[in-house]
Image 1 (tube, one colour):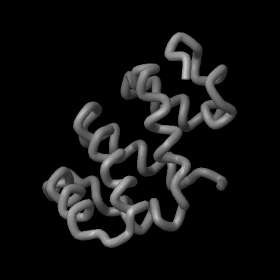
Image 2: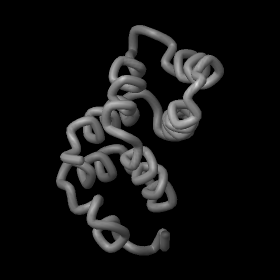
Image 3: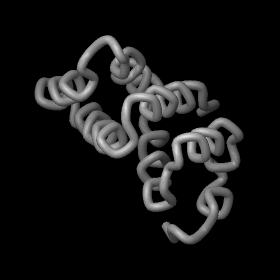
Image 4: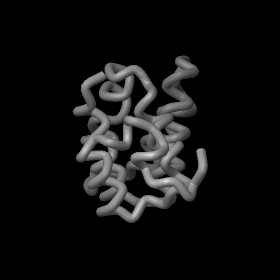
Length: 108
């Protein structure tokens, strides 16, 4: 992906109003648009099952993701956790919670 292009030029995925708000409100860098698109590419059911209750101010979300990664026998789930952890480490709890909400609500 060319980081100099706007999200709309990157992929139709970025035309979604909620995705645009996520990017704008959390100041997601163009270099990370691909990360969001990869996260959106996971099976929706796996995404919800794995991440729906993961990000919370009341628990250690980083540790929960790491534990899921270490204990999962599902390679796709491990990769989902790895990418989510990368996003979490760069953008924090609030952005991660918002990202999960936006991607859970996607149409496909």
